[in-house]
Length: 468
Image (cartoon, rainbow, N blue to C red; front, top):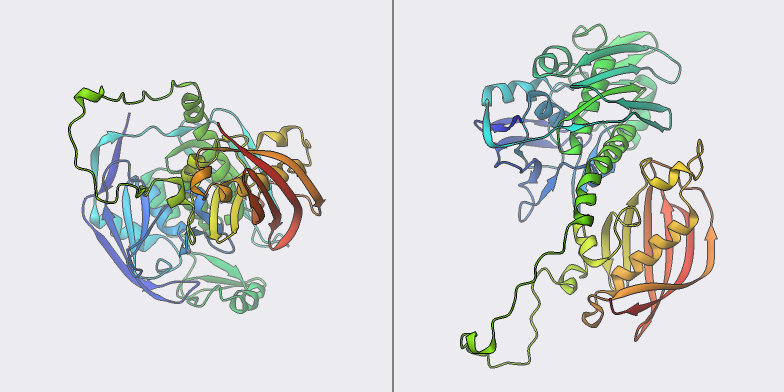
């Protein structure tokens, strides 16, 4: 199998962020094998890091934003595309602001500093994710299809809603074609979009120095087009960067029509889910880990007991420590608390815990197994599964009490249930739950599920805690 690679030397580039307008210095650093790509905010206390993974994507309007806890990094796609394009598997991306520099709107400067830094092979190998069956995804006006392929190929068609500047391009993605055919393609927008972008604070650092503007049939740019099909090639650049959030090189042929960051990252989530299925199956059928056996009493070494013998200490990994005010939980931490497992785990991340309230997220992907029959050609998330999501999130909140740790929350009843709007693939389901009563083994909670700020379902649920 091929070896993993990291940078031979650090690389630095300074500029401004396209959407934030902030001055920023980016530094790419070598990283140990199996690190993957991690973004590090050196301007924040503790220098928090966010792994470049699809599960952390929270915003996709004009760019891709990843979030972990209260830390956000905007417009990650160009840096990720450059690292993937040259074949860097492990790197730390240090930033002293919330967005990488936009440079000239392409990935050319990132490709340049990566070439200057060089790469080095590492002792660990990697296995590309090989798509074995065709996959189709429709998100809004975007259509994407994935086919098995011995390599990484992207075929793309781009245009605006009026069909203007329709362009087509297809290429195998290798370090050579990346640098020659894709890396120099600049970002672009249509003139009529600019007012909206400015009003929503999305291009504070934008200018003709870092973007192409299309007005009617005219192209406004400070230099000639770098490629005849520069617009669609930049769309391919974005696809490469967004699919890098899978965390592994991919062997597949991607066919995209009018792609967007929202559709790209949704596809990354679907492929990530497929990639993890063999691992989950292996864990399901693996025997439980052996429990350490206690020594016979006579073999126990003598130990000094503290003066406060009745004090109970909790390690940072305990359930109580995880479910604390202000905490956020990733999927691995959620699975340490809940007994549910895919495909019946309805919580991807807990984004806020505050007193008797909790907020969680479920990314609804086209890969969910229930969409095969509910309904073919018109996929809708079953309302009862939204109800189940409310119950699971409420169960997490109940586990913050020490006496409840390790118990199971059994769903007993639901009242005042309302389903207001359909939930479809691509939606981010926000689950907000408030505990209204907790006495002994019985808990009651009020839950609301929403998409884009609109309530889609709500209910009052009752459940009982039982020993496993």
